[in-house]
Image (cartoon, rainbow over all chains, first blue to last red; front, side, top):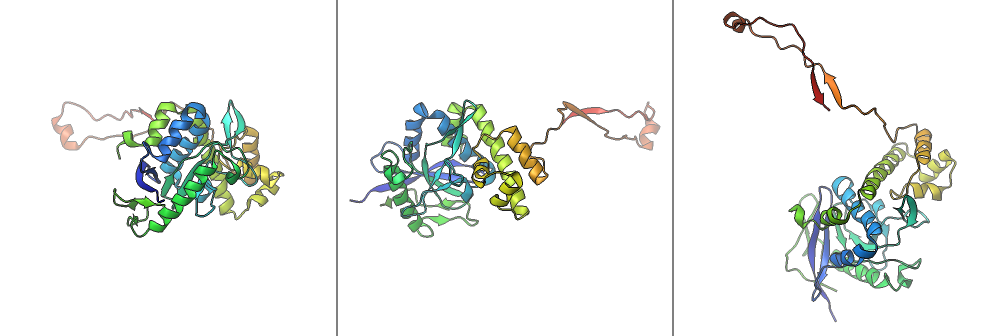
Length: 173
Length: 127
C-alpha cells in the first residue's frame, strides 16, 4: 500500500534551508514528532543537534563532513556527525558523553537538507536497533523518493540554493 | 520567512542552553579553522596526528566539532601548526581614535564671531 506525504518548511537560514515531510493522516511532521518526543527526556542531546543545525545554517553550509552517513537504499545521512571509528560526543556537566540520539536526514546539497525523525540508538548498527530502525528505514525510503523527484516535480532555483515545488505535491513511497 | 515560523530558532529560544550553544559555536569555529589550515597545507589527519604525537582516532575525535577540547589540546594544535586558534586580545571598553582637525573656511572666519581653533579633540568611540 502506498503512503503519501507532503513537504513542509522547517527553517530558512542564510546558508541552508531545512525541510521535513508530513505523512498523510499524521497530526505533525516527522521533525515535529522528533522534537515532541525528545524535548522532555533528551533535551541536552537534542540541544546539541539543534544548535549544530543553526550554526551550519547561519554560517557554514551543510557540508558533507557535518553529517554522518546512514545510507542503506538511498543517500540518507544523520546528525550528529561522527569521527572516524568513534561515536559522536556531546557535553554533559562539562564531560564528553556519547550522543546516541539520531536525527535522520537527507542532505540534498550544501544548501538544502530534509529532516526526518529519529530516536536513541542502542546498538552499533541502525538495522539492529528496535528504536531507530523504523526511522532509519523510513528515512532511506523518503530520501529515495525525494531524490527521484528532484529536477522534475521538485525544481532547483537558479543558483541551487533552494528548491521549488507545488505545495500539493505528494511524495508517494 | 518569519522568524516565528522557524522551528529550530523557536526551539532554541524556548529550550536552548546558552552553555551548549556557545560550546557548539566556539568548538565548530576552532575545528573548522584547523581543517582549513590542514587543507591549505595539504596535510591529512594522519599527518596531523603524527605532528601531534597522537593516534589518528584521537585526532579525529578532536576534530568532530562536538568533542570537549581541553585548553591543553588546543595549545598542542596551535604549536603543531604554528597558528593561533584562540586569540586573546586584552578587553578594551573604548579605543581612542584621532579624527583629525576640521578647519573652518576663510569666508566663515570673515563673517563669524569666532577664531579658528587648533585644539584637537579626541572623541571616544566604542569599538
